[in-house]
Image 1 (tube, rainbow, N blue to C red):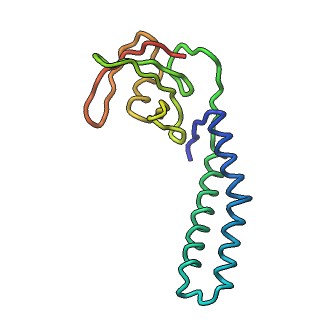
Image 2 (cartoon, rainbow, N blue to C red; image 1 turned 135 degrees about the horizontal axis):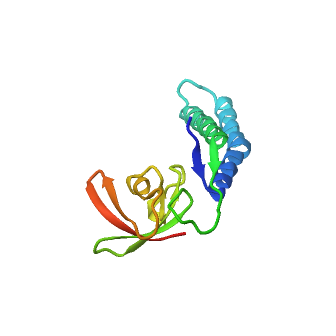
Image 3 (spheres, rainbow, N blue to C red; image 1 turned 30 degrees about the horizontal axis):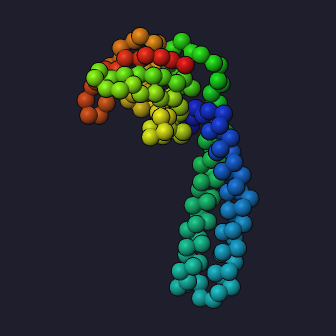
Amino acid sequence: MSPSFLTKQGYEKLQEELEYLRTVKRQEVAERLHEAIEGGELIEDAEYEAAKNEQAFVEGRIQELEALLANARVIEETGKMDVVQVGATVTIQEDGNDKEVYTIVGPVEANPRCGRISNESPLGRALMDHKAGDRVKVDAPNGSFYVKILKVE
């Protein structure tokens, strides 16, 4: 598995989720399963099936988080950056449009609506290793376009 880039906050958030699933959620699901088993006919018991499905989901998510955190590379915040890297905040402008500000993060933390784009997305990939003042071609699924990098922090 290739390393996942995570901010310190993203790493801590995933650790908290993992701890919650291991301690609280596992116990809740185990209690639901126990209640369903005590309830009688297991073959036709919808509550038992729902609890088993939830248990499978929780255990799968725990495994996913464990693997992700084991391979995570936490992005060090080094202050002002000269070139776009994972962890940088970039102000860009496409010809004729308003300025846009994005933070470059790994795919796990990407949320474009919140201004967090993946370094593996077409825009993120195009911006990598460029600096303020550069005009960058972005090859997107709907066609290519250019953006100017106004600021890198």
